[in-house]
Amino acid sequence: MTNKIRELFLLKQDLVFLNHGSFGACPKPVFEAYQAWQLKLERQPVAFLDQSRDIISNLKPVRIAVANELGASSEDLVGVTNATEGLNIVAHSLKLQPGDEILTINHEYGALEKTWELVTERSGAKVVEVEIPLPLVSKEQFVDALINAMTEKTKILFLSHISSPTALLFPIEDVVAEARKRGIISIIDGAHAPGLIDLNLDALGADFYSGNCHKWMMAPKGSAFLWARKQVQPLLEPLVVSHGWTAQSGGPEQQGIFGNSRFLDCFEIRGTRDPSAWLATQDAIKFAKLHNWSEKVKHADALARETAQTISNLTQLPLFSSPEFCAPQMIAIPLPECDVDNLKRRLYEEFNIEIPVFRWRGHCIVRISVQVYNTREEANCLVDALTKILNLGVKES
Ligand SMILES: Cc1ncc(COP(=O)(O)O)c(C=O)c1O
Image (cartoon, rainbow, N blue to C red; front, side, top):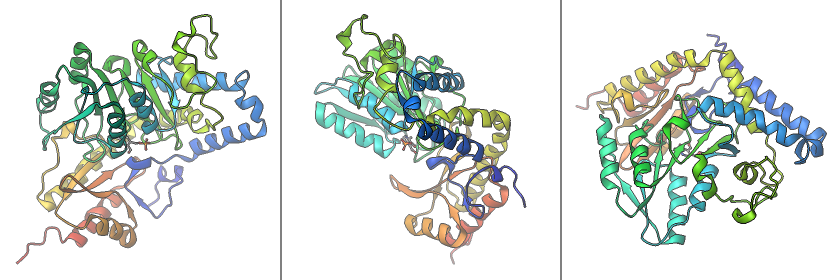
């Protein structure tokens, strides 16, 4: 069967790619726009990169385009290479004392757990990890667990909007609002959220939010943003100090590169680097609009949910949440006890299926991502392969 949408992507045609969630996939026209930026850079590097020439005016429209998508002001976000970088900037900026607590949950992404490990090692603060029990079937289960764990010592709330291992869309709004009331700084790891759910960062009202554009917005790899509420922007210090940095005490007489924004000055200029992936994010946004992506993803979401339910019926293992807490298009499906590495390898080598299979806190999990380019045949291929390898639906005598 020809698949017109799939032909718009660079993915190998015979690959059953059910893992958009890990690193995304970039459509051809967006990749071409990315390469066009790189060529432009290389043809006249000085005009392109020198701060007194094109770079400042080139960065502005991409900030505006991304901010429009995210319900934010273009003055409140900057491009970063990935969500890990954006969240590291925040984690390393905040001043913590021994005894201070960082409240988080047991569904966080490994690289960020490590980030907090380093921050706490240096500061003497500690991480308090709340368990969100599974299956997640009510908002209260999540909200109460976190609000009950907030104490005088809680200085930071750190949460994934959509979790990596369990692909749950957490109802974070009330928890963020409660944190604000108590003077707790909220930091949201939105690595998966842009392009997957409707975001309105101003309305959400967190203090800091970082998300990837290279996953579900389909920008080239290396495109992400860090958003900061205006009032807390002065708390941030760059990980890499470059020409834009000014001491907080610099005073208004210090003329910034981006007018009066220390935030933009500190983070948009980070030494010599290739900003092409970030610049091409405008083209990813245009691509999604041109192809009416927000309508098309509805089929992809339905296929993801149907496939997850089919596998759940075969394994007789319930999904990790009721439907409202499942992220769109991406579902973590529990599997019976198995050798996860061997299963992942066999899915790839024998069935050409690229999909994450892993062990998380005692659960064996396969996490399916369904993007618009995926077909029902591909989803069926996964069901058939799992059935065969794991002997699903076959009663042991
Ligand atoms: C919840 C979460 N946070 C952070 C990241 C890190 O993303 P990146 O490697 O693009 O920084 C991921 C990656 O999948 C993720 O799932």
